[in-house]
Image 1 (tube, rainbow, N blue to C red):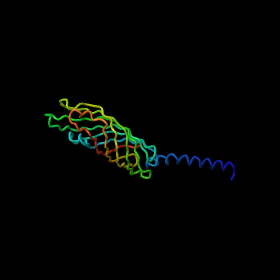
Image 2: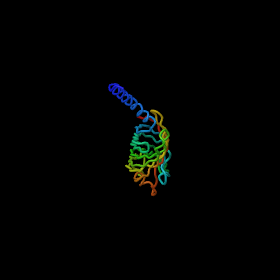
Image 3: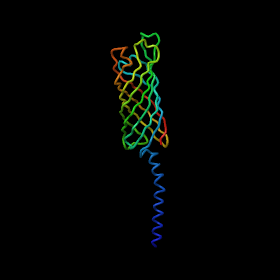
Length: 200
């Protein structure tokens, strides 16, 4: 073959490779084979455990989360979470509510060979502001509370959509909002939620 013909064929092959590289990379991201970014909403129910659980009733929990998945087995989450639980204390004529607003960072680990259906476990750090809403008669007080969230769940990824189910147990490092109410303030916060969002 003439040298010019060889150069032309080489250039044609190079352009063809470049033309397929972009769609292939995008396909890998859609299938979860490479890192992607997820944004999803969370909604469910939660309640306190231990001695704190004797003071509260089950209530709604909600949140929004940004998930970065640099590899198929390792992910990082930043999220806002909130919840509302009634305080069931017979000493009060009107029952106040405990409203939690917080944020957390979570490190997640999942099997590298499962992407479309991805089970995971995670642990992290968080902080919440506990607002006692209603008459508390000095038994309860609003407080800032550090916590350690421990999570497990399953994510379902298809195309640009992501959905899932998860449960999170938060180890509370401070329970100052209930110090004036009971002696046993040991316990945590357990919630279960559904997630729904988009992948980029």
